[in-house]
Length: 272
Image (cartoon, rainbow, N blue to C red):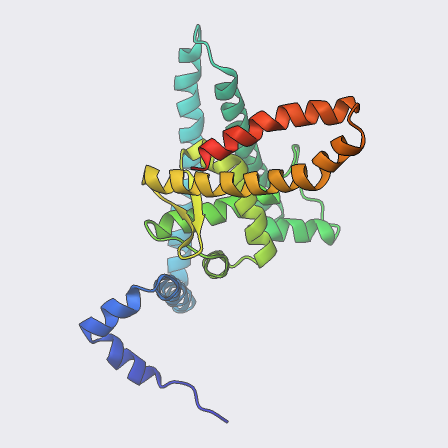
């Protein structure tokens, strides 16, 4: 049986500044180290709680006050802001953005209510409770899983900036499965990136990233346009052109050819 690496040797190596700097340049290593620090802190807190029950009582009081204060602060903020909206006009996009945020607030309130009533403190626990037939009070629609995964993916990418993360690194950072990361990434692209004004890009070298450099955005856009142009060209040459050649009087084929000629030229220009 092959023995694992000696932790003492690893520790001694990492105490060398040059080795530590080189090691921490690796994005995955840096994330795993940060995750280990978090896990060690959590284990330390758990040991202290076991040895000193009064600590847990103090934490409970602090967390309770934070929770009540957060609810009170939210209501107080709305009480101050909403009356000031009188006479203001909002665009359709602004209204839709506010509605999405209201949906998040409602989902968060339902999450909190379920935690208080059933002791299910994560979304997965609440879903599991429903699967066991436990009634989870929820007056409104539950928070969509795609939104939950998307928030985890976004936080991981924000913490990694300016570096990017590949899918396997996102799985390590969020503790989601590959398919869950994929659902979360689709939500980021569909909703979160626009809401937070954080354009998301992807490269083979860096993976997914929230870059602040417009040159990165433009290069990514051009690559996407080139891919779309390639697929569109194959549709035209492989299906539409033969269709029109066999049935030159087909109105749909004539219309599609006329419209796609302009689209193809536009994509070719954008992809340069």
